[in-house]
Length: 419
Length: 127
Image 1 (cartoon, rainbow over the protein chains, first blue to last red):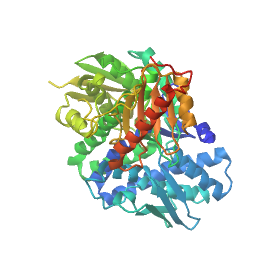
Image 2: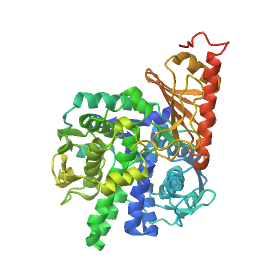
Image 3: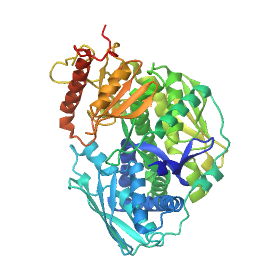
């Protein structure tokens, strides 16, 4: 565990996190399920599994190759054990890697996606297709790295899934992959693309809270099942390359093949920002840890928005700053670093339009939480409240007015009250 | 916007030093529960009793304690306010979580009662 902690570091001044040279962020299961469901809704379950598995394999392979080198893991067994440890450290669950150079199997227990899907939807919906594409891609990457195989030479497939009410998760790892020569978006790529970090309103408070949260997160580790609980929330330390590739590949596919649906799909990836801020930020604000480290939330607009900005930084979302805040009217957030645009620029080049869907909509959710939640009443952040706040009563418009992916020197999102 | 009613039976305090059990906000249904310690509770003494009862200290921040039991549940405790959050492990079936929370709450009350009984820990004072 201490070795894995040593693998984790930050991009100085930018509030971005790295595991080895792979960027990662904290996200909870509500966000993860919503994000992957969006890919599935846009592409269909089978193609979505392929896209997610490919993104997982690519991002994980990069991480694992780094980790093996840094740990000096020489034998396949050492490498597979290291890969399983990292999977647990990430809060993804317990993954037994049983494959050899010619393929084989993997077995998962308490896998984040399957376990969380069954927790959230299992009582209402019967799922028919496996969900653990991330584990399938990770298992194939781990086996490739363990046996020094070419990137993309193995394919992972989930043959039994807990989310489908099967007893556990099983994977087959087979040879015959089509190969993968795409370069990873690593620390060097991120550092090449981020701009100059700025300062904004409430900077002193935000910086102090961020520091406190970061210190606290250093002590957070996985439990015996490989799940990570921090602030009373089950979270993953997840590879941002996975989110970025799955989101942008999906949107690009839709832009090419069903352009009339582009706005809807972009809207759903944006809504994942609402989901994250409501469940993760909201529950964090109501947690005993927050009360102990910062104090109980009084519910003032400035307090909630600066708190949310600090949380975003601590979770590795980038050095977000508050450029303007007029309670009841307007919020302007800026950043020269987040986990979206550096990937876009490195992988696809400059975009004709803004591409920071998460950033733009998280900002809107800040305003919704700051104005519509009665924090002193310690509300239960339930699905019903989410629906009430974000489906029936969304009173804010958001627009990304500047975006580094489009060539601007910073990203800026302007949130205004709907007339 | 307030938390829903707690349990079908009337909430009861487990001891005079511990408030009734209520649902707390959390990322999953019925995983997090809250109760309140009386101001007379001394953190060091209670922490020692919890450790003696098998809890492992996972966070010893000056303002906060997080303790984990071998069975998987956690207690997160804000020292200044006396707020305690009982965290049920995610593996516990949703239908069994309220009962699990009640058991932990009762056990916590029992520990506090022992602390204020005839053989009370000298570091635990009562009002």
